Amino acid sequence: MHRKRRFAHLARWLHTYLSMLSFAILLFFAATGLTLNHAEWFEGERNTARFQGTLDSAWLKSSDPQVVEQDKIVDFLRRAHRIKAAVSDVHLDDEHCEVLFKGPGYEADASVDRHTGKYELTVSRFGFVAVLNDLHKGRDTGGKWSIVIDLSAVLMTLVSLTGLTLIFFLNKRRVFGLAIAAAGALLCYLAYAAWVS
Image (cartoon, rainbow, N blue to C red; front, side, top):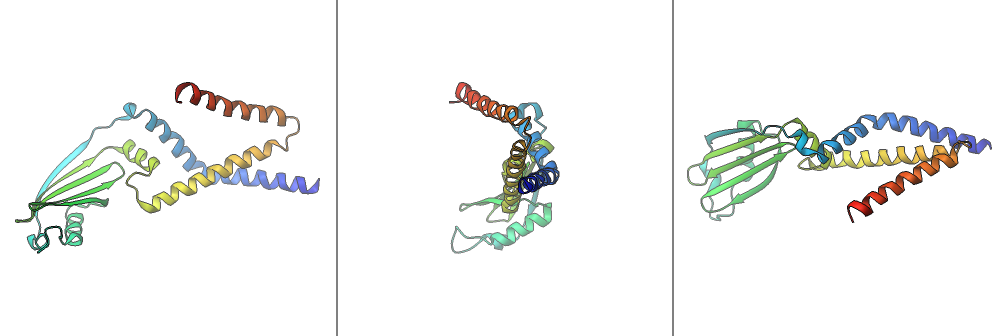
């Protein structure tokens, strides 16, 4: 009995403090689940700006048409236009070098003339909700944010399991609580079977 009481105390302690630790991230993923499911409700204006400039054409010329000094080009564009997003793609042909940067709710596309070094840059910002939605999906967010998503999933799983564990220590409510949990799982399955599969 003493061991059972200690386990119940541990489960309650874990549930309480894991819930508090993960409260903000749980709220974030719950709210952005709604904004993702109803993206048309939250469509913001796409804010687009265009820039022109010239960079060192020597960075674009080499004996191999598929080689440019990519690091120098990327660093120049980042400094000149305060681009913080990661490089998503670099495309080369005989005439142009195209560099695409992508981040949450953000895109910057540069097209550079390989002969003159003149470039055109289009920067698009898709709004605050688009940033949140991309963070939710882990799209264009990099490996470190992926770790945040994984840790969030682990925390939410632990909160759910410790909460479920607690019902086993409530003798008067155990059967009703488990029945409600089973009903919730069944309703999810029925919704899937009826509307999805």
